[in-house]
Length: 276
Image (cartoon, rainbow, N blue to C red; front, side):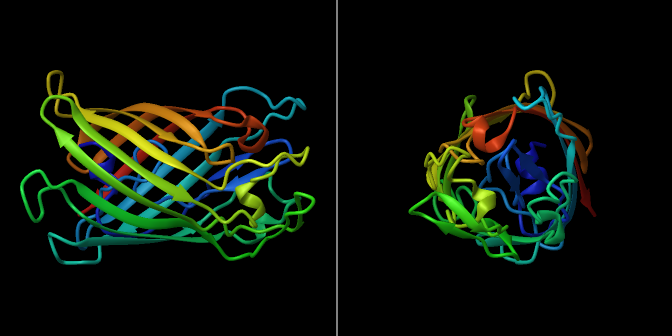
C-alpha cells in the first residue's frame, strides 16, 4: 500500500511539472519511484502503468517577499521487465514551473529517469533490496565557471545518480540507505548560491517507511532524508491512505537543508493511481 509499492516497480514515463524555486535558484525535478522525496528501491511491476499527480505548495514567502506559486508533477510510469528477481523502470517527464521563465527552464520541459533493482529475498533469505538509477536528466546543458561560482549557461541537466539498499524488519518496518551525486555544472543543481558560496554535489540518502497494520492496511507512513547543501537536500515526512487497491493519496511536508538554494519549505499532496 505504501507509496513505494504504488509507484515503484518497473519503468515509467513521468509527465512532471515539478520545480523548486528559490530567490536566485530554480530546480526542476524529474522523479523516479520514491518515498516522500527520495528514490526508493521499489520498482513498478511489468506492464503496470502508474499515474501520479504531485502538488507542492510553499508554506511561507521567500525572503524577498515573493510568494512562489504551487507546482505540480504529472507522472506516468510503466513496468517493462517481466522478471521477478530483476526489475527496471524508466521515465519521461514534462515539467512546468510557471515562474522559471527568466532562467529559460520552462522552455525545456523534458526530463528522463531510470532505475534497475533486485527486490528483497530474491536470491536468498534476508537479502536486502538493491536499486541503482538516475533522474533529472534534462535536455538543456548548463555550464558552471568554478573559478567564480557563476553559471555562464542555464541548464536543466542535474543528472542525479544514486544507489540504495533496503531491508524490511519485523514490526519495525523498512529501512533504506544510499548515496547520490549530481552534475554541479547544471544551474538547476544550484551547487552555488547567490553569494557564490559552494554547496554539495553529493550526499547520503536514508528513509524509514511502514504500513501501519495495527490501525489499517491502508495506512502508510514514511520519513526520508536527502543530504547535501544543494537544491535537493531535504528532510521529508508524510502519511498515505489507500482509497482502493490501486488508488492512494500522500500528505507530506518537505524541510529543505539550504533554503538559499531550494527555497522555502513545502507541503505536498500526492495522488497515485495504478493501471490495471
